[in-house]
Image 1 (cartoon, helix red, strand yellow):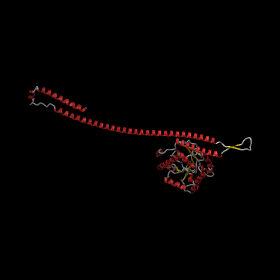
Image 2 (spheres, helix red, strand yellow):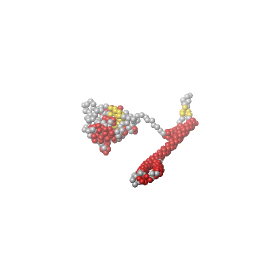
Image 3 (cartoon, rainbow, N blue to C red):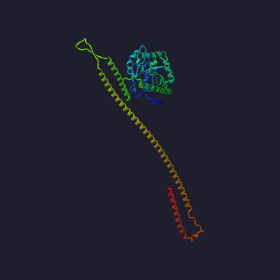
Image 4 (cartoon, rainbow, N blue to C red):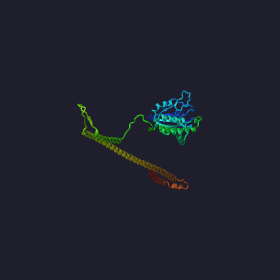
Length: 434
């Protein structure tokens, strides 16, 4: 029974892809209240058939745990609102968890705030969301809300659950809908109650829902646009874009140069004080010839650069046209090849039809030959039977004595007749065989 269930679960899992291992590495940080299902998420991403153990009263995660599943690095944080007794040495305060969280956030590409609505909306969990929002507002673009224990929920039920959550007074007060800019997602696992005792129908239903939710969550984690790039990427531009940018910068440079020359001609002057006397002051302005010369040189270089850019742009256009023409010729050749292939197929079909007709004709000729051969054999057998010599009676003894010399003549005639008949039959048989 257990083996058949495992085989069917494996067959369900083959219909979905797991966490890819050939993608750039992404870091997912799991955050949320205690016993919300953060550690279960990392297990589900590794194996969709993960069977949770018996529910416990207290959380087992006491420090950040790092897991690797394919190209996904998972950071499992201890939960807020720790349920350990106050007298316990293992109890973690929210302040201590925030101090653990701060160095881990810089490495995270995506932050999943895990929240369980199995027992309704917990106001303490909402307060932990508010605490994270007020402490780290700069990570708003990375945050998503993950609702667990959703393996038995339908789509309508999920939608209603989200509306009820965001309609809560404190959620509206703290504006948490705007905080989860990466949306709301659902996850779950096979329930412990379905395994003990074994309920195969519930297991298959829950596992199918888990696979669908898991696939959507994995796709969301590997969407490139949701991650902040920590390293600069090299951007590529087309030739037309580069030429346009070059011309635009040239025009801006010309306008700025003309504007600056007008300002300099009208207002800027260089003051010189002679070294011999400090009382006398003289001003010497820069000559206009120098500005005109610099302006003409700049315009010449700009025109040369514009000409070079135009030539390169024309060459790029010519290359593009040649590529388009080659592509058109390739398309035409491909079409011609398709037409030839179709003609060859039609000829092959017609040759097959002709071959079948020839085979049918050959069979008919064989049947006719066999039938004519049977007719000839019957005719021959009938003629040989009719040529048998009759029995001699007593009345005919006198006739035989009188006609002693006649049999020789008759024998000669019969031999000639038989030879002629045999030659005629041989000719008919040979003609039919041919």
